[in-house]
Length: 510
Image (cartoon, rainbow, N blue to C red; front, side, top):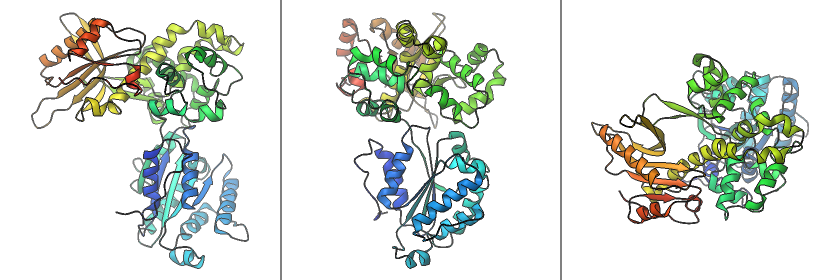
């Protein structure tokens, strides 16, 4: 279907091409009925910046809600809508019912024709920080549902986007028996930049070692560079330690308490001490439900709610073991929170007293083991799913990690990067990639042998490994012996240069 009203992404909007395409397709679709979209994402992701650019391109109506009483919120909305419609006097809606009815009426063909507007062009309406309004006016989703349903029969060019940062609230808008369930034509989550895009955004793409460390601390959150740090970017690896001390670890820096604020901003999180303990457990390497419960001194059943809330808030993710059904591990998705729990929280009093340099100097091992190492493993899986997919093959299957039990050696082999194609119709599950990732270790033949042993064990368990390749990922390099094996086609070696696109790995065909 052609989209005659499509608008191109402004050059000032960095990256976000996929998100813009989805939003533009929604905003420009020439359907004669009302359409609803839900846009969510944690704070600092640039949602408002993106949506304001969209409204500017389409000439629509934007309203950014604030934390206010119901009466004040309604008054602010009324004033903004009056200004948009060009009314000489301010509107004074008595209820949100009246306001929502009038808003949808603005898109009626007869009203738009009377105002001199093109009647067949869609009208984009963005209500940002919608959870603020729902908190004081919980009837709003039902009122919007009524108007959406009514304007499936009556003609309307409404393109309504509801946006918010409270992930649990936004996720609930379309869940289960929620009023808006089944009404949305778009559900978009604005996520952090990928690790390569983040390196370009921070202008460190030419220095993979620096880019990897920077991403392990701050991830791909765009607001941290410009809004929080006023473009204070580390100048090479030699400046990284000083940069950490003067930004993230400095008590006067906006980033110093940011991890705490991220947790406090979620509406469903009230006992922040419990949630910080859960996150600290994961940061310390206790990644299973039982391990987390044991670390914080609770029973496994007692931590179900905080785990679910943290997952709904996109601060924690549960990753299943690709080799063992029913087994899973948790991982913190926000690097800054992981950095806070692993490095900052244990030394909080010292950091508040200005001992950033001393604390950071004593945290090198902790940073490598609890922050950079696990983060590097996640980046390697992201590489396989994204930039490396065309090199490694298009039919990789599900990408994750898993544990292979070796009964002969009485040990477990941790596979950091694995790709498995599920079996169907009587066919066996096929393992297409086994990989190990090391942050601070020069990888050698022993790492390759461990992968070979894992492959043999999976073959013995009945899995198809005929097309399985073996990959070593390292931020510290590879031994000459391992490089020789790679040259003979026995392994695929991926270093930082390959991860960041500065070098192309030799493709290994199993």
